[in-house]
Length: 334
Length: 281
Image (cartoon, rainbow over all chains, first blue to last red; front, side, top):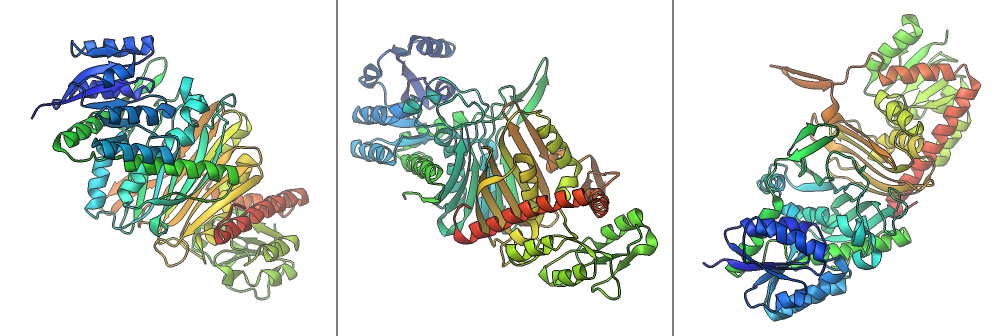
C-alpha cells in the first residue's frame, strides 16, 4: 500500500513540530509539504524537515498547500480561532484533517467542521495524543480487562508551567485560557475510559498566576457524566516557570474492585546541573497519534479520536465558561 | 491538672488512652461509654451522633468536652453546643506536622500570594463512616482550607455513595474570598489498605506539595506483609490534646479555638446544603 501523503498546516502551536517529526519518521507516511505565513516559524520547520528529508514543498500561504494534488491529509496547528476556517478549507480541497485541540471555539463551529468533512468524504480527527501515551494504553488495557471492576469516579489533572505567551493568551485568537486549552485532554480520557458522555459541569476559574493575562490561568472543574459518574479536572497553568517538568497529565480511576493511577510525564530521569530537569524516556505519544491517523485513513476508517471527540471537548468548554460566569452547574450540549 | 478524663467511643480509643496517660497521668484516665458520677471531668467523645447525645448533660455537669464531627444534626444545634462553652472540636490536621509546615510556609510568604489549593484524602472502605462522608470527615479539611486561604466565598459540593450504601465520597470546588480557588476530594471508598493524602498549595511564586505515596520515610516489608509509615516523636493526636488541655486553662485560647471551630462548622453546613441543593453555597 502506498504511504499517506501528509502536510503540516501552520506551526503556531508548538505541537506541530513534534507531529512533523512523527510524520517524517512513520513508514506509512510521506511528508510532502508544510505551510506557515510566519517566516521565522516556517524557517524553523524547514530546518527540522531538512534533518530527515529533501524535496518537501515549503509554502507561505496555506491555500497554495491545499491546492497541491500530492497532499492527501493535513495536520492543522493554527491558533484556535482559525481551526474552523482552515478545516473547512482543507475538507473542501479534499484533504483529510487532523486538527489540534481544542477543535473549535464554539460547538456550532465544531459541528459544521464535522458536517463538512462528512459531506466532502474526508476524515476529521482531533489531536488528543494522551490516548496514545504508553501508560494510558496500559491503564486502558487493565481497565478493559476488568482489573478494577466498574468505574466509580475519575480524577484528572493537566497542569502547565505558567509561561505561555503570544496568541495563547490573546482571547480573540485562543478563545480563552486554561479552561479552553487544558480541559480537553483530561475530559477525553474520562470519556474514553468510562464510555460515558459529560452532561453537566461546575467550574471555577481565575487569573492569578499571572494577573496581567487577559485569559484565565487557574481552574477546577467537577463534571457529571451520564449515569451520575463524577470526574474532576484541574487544568491550571500554575506550575512555576522553573518547575522540573512542562506540566503533567494524571488520571486516577476508582473502580468497584480497585484503583488505578497514571501520570504520562512520570517516565523520566532527573538531571541536576544548575537546575533540576526531568528528562522523559517515554515513547512519543505524538508518534502513535499520527500513526493511528495515517493507518486509519489508509484503511478507510475513522481515526481513534474523531471530530465528535473534539466536539464534546468544545461543548464542555462552552458549558464550563457559562458555569464560571453564573456560579452554577451547567448542562453540556450532547 | 486534676480533672479526671473519660474517653468515650471512636476507633482510636487506644491511641487516645496512651496520649492521656502521658499528658495527665495514669490514675486520671478511665474509659466509659456513659457519664456516671463524674463531674468537671474532661470527656473525650468520638464517633457517630448516638455517642454525642450526652454532650449537653456533660456540659451541665461542668465537664469540658472534646468531640469530633459530627457534633449534632444541624448547624444551629452544633453552634448551640459550642456556645454553651467548654467544648473543643477535634481538628487534628492543624496539629499535623505536614500541615503545620505547609501552613507555616504559606503564612511566611514562601510561595507568594495564594493561587490554588488541592487537598485529597483517600481512605479505605473499612474506615469509619457515620451517616456520610461529609458528617464524618469534612470538618477537619475545611478547617485546613480556611487556615490556608481564609474565609470561603463559595463552595460547590457533589457527594456520591460509591461503595458503601451511603455517601462515601465527596468532590468540592470553591473559591476563597481572597480570590484563590480550591479543590477538595474526600473518599472512604478506596480498596483495603489503600490510604493516600495529597496536599498541593500553589502561590504566585512557588508551589508546596506533599504526597503520602512518595513521602513515606519508613518502608517495612516482612513475610507477614508490608507497611509504610512516617514515624513521629509527637503524633498529631498528642499535640492536639496537649493544646486542648492548655485551652482549658486559657480563656483567650479557648475563645480562639471556638471561633475557628464555628467557622469550620459554618462551612461544613454550607457543604451539606450545597450537596443537597446541587448549588454553590
